[in-house]
Length: 631
Ligand code: ADP
Image 1 (cartoon, rainbow, N blue to C red):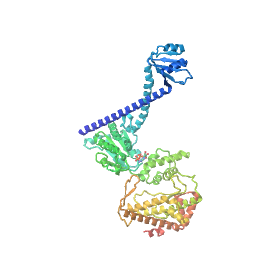
Image 2 (tube, rainbow, N blue to C red; image 1 turned 30 degrees about the horizontal axis):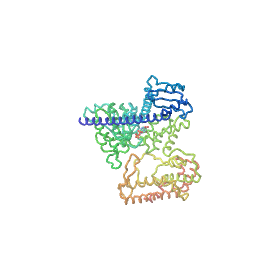
Image 3 (tube, rainbow, N blue to C red; image 1 turned 90 degrees about the vertical axis):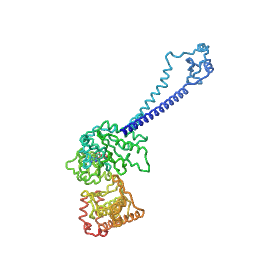
Image 4 (cartoon, rainbow, N blue to C red; image 1 turned 135 degrees about the horizontal axis):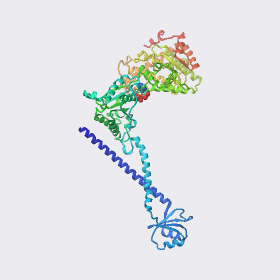
């Protein structure tokens, strides 16, 4: 109770602060506008009018240089004839009560008049003051209204939140639209049930969950799942990104959190979805670069989560791909205490995602989505949705009404390596090097035992920088990789450079990406997977953000680190030698296949393998002892 009061007082205080800000801002604006109008009037009058002395006026009168005069109580306004020194300016002078003035004007034949009976003062005020004021006021409203909307609802309501902009009363998305992710759906079903019939839970005395955290790599369908929860439960869906809260004004984020919860409570039961919650939920004990605004926002969020009535049925779903940096307070029971993992889909999951998206696209009858799923290990839902869409675009481009298998295969490659770049002109010599390089990879892969089959070799350049590439696809989904397989993978990666050495006895820059990947794999063998005798099963690196790029962080001494480099180098040298040996032993085969590739530009897996199998040279690793020599 007390708490509630405190909170209300705090709210009121914040509203007062906001009102104060509003008034200050309004006052400054009005003063500025008045200043501008005064300046404008002054400039206008000094441009069109000029003050003269009374005797200058009399001189003009005597010289008959006056057209017309208007006599007011305190001022005489003079319109001189053309050709005077004053140009076409209107002159004025003080009315000093000269009794002979009218006689003088009459004798000079000047038209003269007095002030008009109606109230010109009022008109003048209207024109010179009220008009411009109104004008500026309108401009001000237009400008700040727009800016304010972006910032959250107009200048006059700084803290108002943009959540309502993303609110949907009915998302129309159900669990059926989310393919795979069965475990995640299972955990979320409970929340749906709770939103449907909260009394079932409250009757027995169970506390209802307030929040769940959806954790997983980008594009795995976290937002989609949150929408599906709202859709299944038929409740409104409020969605905001964590970064929406963090504003340039301190205190705004907190005000937004308050507004959001206020709105949500009005609409309860409902779902609040906060995407990228790490933007506000970052751990507060981070000494470097602490951020007042973010911390205030986080504190407010924690306070609101504690404060709202759990029986009302407001459920907060947060999404993040960096759970390890979240503040512990956010994860404690009663807040985001549930963690729902939304990981990359496996083979079956990928096929399901493809099926969901294929439903919206017209496809030929005999489409094999399993093949596409097999070709895309590591792809997330968003990638797969993109692949289906790319395929549809390609079909339209080629003037077809239905998507075929080739469209899908090509779009997988577009996602992997970029679009084909047929207009890049390479010299014959360079083409030859690329062909040998690619066949080097493929041949090493074919000759080793623990490798994935070659699916395609091509020397058509792609926009993402590859001059050619060799596509290997696994037969089945693998969750474990053996040491032998890793060694063979490295050997295949180094096979491109080895082929250049064997054939041309020179090397090129073409292997840079292979080198990078091979080194990383070798290093992981040493530091993460404990695959060397020297370091045994010691953890030398740990993966920091496993849902993003999974970059490892080293945790060993500088001396050990130097030794890691040496051991890594040993592995690379071993594999490099092995690749060279294999290709040397099969140099005729290397040349034949490379010539064929040069001629056809693309070789499919079957064509390639039949050439390998026909060859009289060593067909596979089992009959040579190169592999054993390395162990
Ligand atoms: P996240 O929030 O995890 O970054 P999203 O939910 O925004 O990812 O997913 C982006 C898009 O990818 C979705 O709109 C949907 O088209 C597609 N998608 C991702 N995962 C799935 C899935 N499991 N089933 C169907 N579509 C998916």
